[in-house]
Length: 520
Image (cartoon, rainbow, N blue to C red; front, side, top):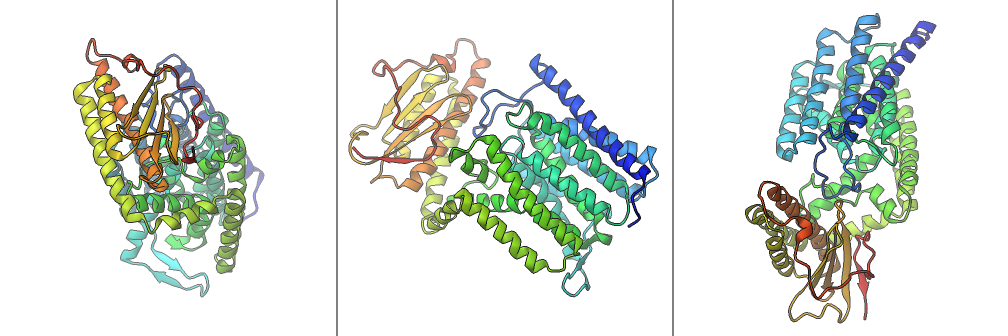
């Protein structure tokens, strides 16, 4: 690698500043337009923590900065380029992945459709001659031609990273901060031989990410959205392939995997958790590592800094793997495992691992309960579309919770109106009981009660979460129907329960989502 000159440093600074100011300025414009109601916000999802809708267009600003930096580097510098064809593949495929995510931000798409389009984009990249072709054994330094396996490796790599970044985007600043670390790693990988196009492009995206994090750091004013998450994850994946030596799977691909160790473990546990319960693998929940830390009473900012610290340690190990070209890989793999194990123990997250292992034996029964609850979920949402009346919806919802086996349900709407259902012949106050309250992102609170002898704790936790989400989706469909029909009661016009004066003084705090056992 040639020594850096003053001109090189000026190019690096210029790309960084250009990316930062373009992203920063555009986000400012987006936020001003959002304040005036000129930016459409997608309906909040069930698991979103923010009650006030925030723009999901941070990815627009980052992609704009990416395009500006790419044009500036290509037109105003003479640094080595990967070639016009490869350059076109990088830019066009990244924009295509962003467009898919932006479409989902504006109008939610099905998971199967998104997955199919992602595969199509990855296949196009492979056909564009940006691919994984060789595997270099770091122990023997010998090359192994992958042949057809290279196709599957390329597609898997380019599809996995966008979804990985999207799945960890559950707390303000987390996905943006981890992507910032990864883009710094990409810049280092690109500069291993010489200062080239991919290095300056990575530096420009680093600047854009810092401009974005200025508005996304807790409390966030804007989200990157699926468009930003898909774009960043895909760009990291394709740059790691381009930066590798003629498509060799060596340190250039192993290093990003090390840096992503924390998200990989988190997503892996999420897939295992949902698989054991029979839930869709891409269904969001509030059981990720960052949710666990917040549940322990740690502030969002402190949680974010703790996760940043672990990610920085993983990034350091990734740089060591790259600098040694994969040598001593078993040693660094052991160190990485040790870092994650210590972090999990200090955070208390290892308790959830044992909880998952205890659910292995009851996986079959949990999956049956899930199928039954999801069937009732589809029925209620369809019924909400047909009736368009909150009174009918509340009556149907009482039927649903009765079929699921709850003994009592309390519903508090955003305007404070309270409604209670209790199963006939069941005394919700007698004996041991399970009780939990779910606070939904629109301000609705639903408290579920069940007899511990009738409903095991694991089933209660699962069905409570599904039943709360079902109400939210059905009420949303009903509200949409109300907008198109005159004279239909709104959510706040649900008939009052004359027997219920006040629900203040829950045994379980509104924000508590974990079941607790209460003994009379």
